[in-house]
Image (cartoon, rainbow, N blue to C red; front, side, top):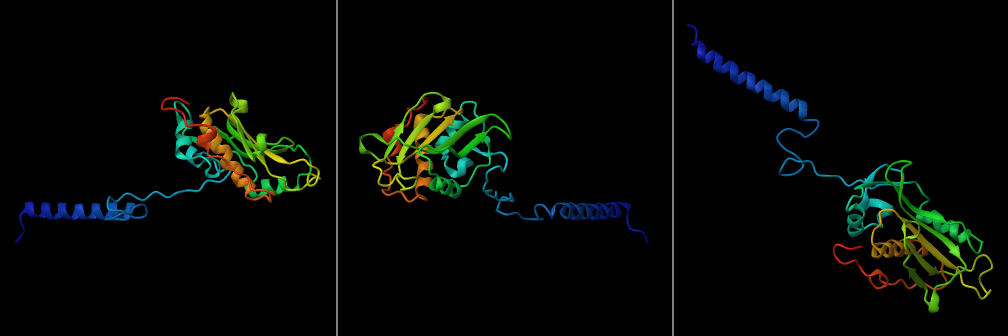
Length: 230
């Protein structure tokens, strides 16, 4: 005896749903798996990509090899700044330190530490350089920060570091490194001080300065801006 037509339709309907579910699972299993995920919500966990110079656009907070903290990155993004920047390929910190150690001129050609643009071969947003200079920090200090005006000369840091090369040792003259910045983000002077001091610490830690520089607190040489101001 034949079964009622309605039961045949119901069974076929259930089989069709089962086949569709199996096909759906098969089509997505390579991406997310079926019936589960990386966490309780089923969403994959984000992976932290460590950017390198010339790697393409990266978040501002990852710029300059980690010199930018979130406070500086927030300033750079506001009010209309980019959320991502392009790190132009420069020498590594070790390579820059080696070049400075071998430099014999009293005043050397600036070495690029970090250069950021809005895209590949795009508009410059920020640049930090370092070079030997015959000038010394005033008043016997080993480090001196100077507030400057305008994006082309956004801040300078003079750091005494006599490594005894180029005839400086025993000449009665000290050698100093001058760290300079161009800034078209127009972040605060406090951020300039933080970036320059952090850059200088990276370089002098790799040089054999006869006396270790005594770096000031950025808050002392350039107080943080009041809320709403830079």
